[in-house]
Image (cartoon, rainbow, N blue to C red; front, side, top):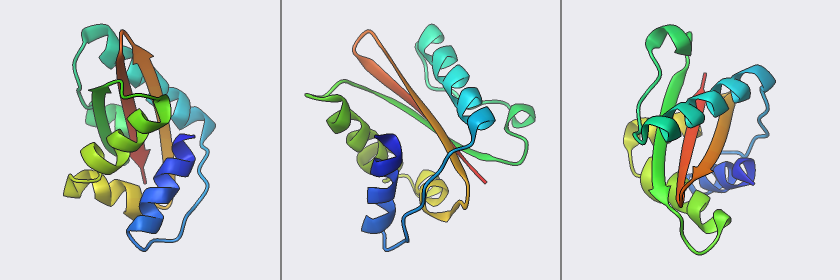
Amino acid sequence: MIAGIINDFRKFKGIEPSFYWHKEENKNCLEHCYYMANIGEVVHASKGHLKNKSEAVARCNFKATAEETLRHLVFEVLGKSHSHADILIGSENIAYAVHARQCTMYITIRGW
């Protein structure tokens, strides 16, 4: 679902859609989502963990559906931040993960 929403954002910005999958980095993104949920804060990974990748992280309370929540995170939270939007539309490779805990959804997106 998240790949489709990212592609919807890219189309909205006039950028060709792409399909992303990077097994190892997606795993790293999920671990980072777990970490943020455990501490209850949005934080960026250290530069040493990113290895020349850019990172966009966010969280929000659940909306009516999981899809509505993810659309809000991509379009309204990350998409309205120029540096985060640049990752979504300017990266050739994107890894991502989401994690939900106690009515809050966390998202990590990495681009390179």
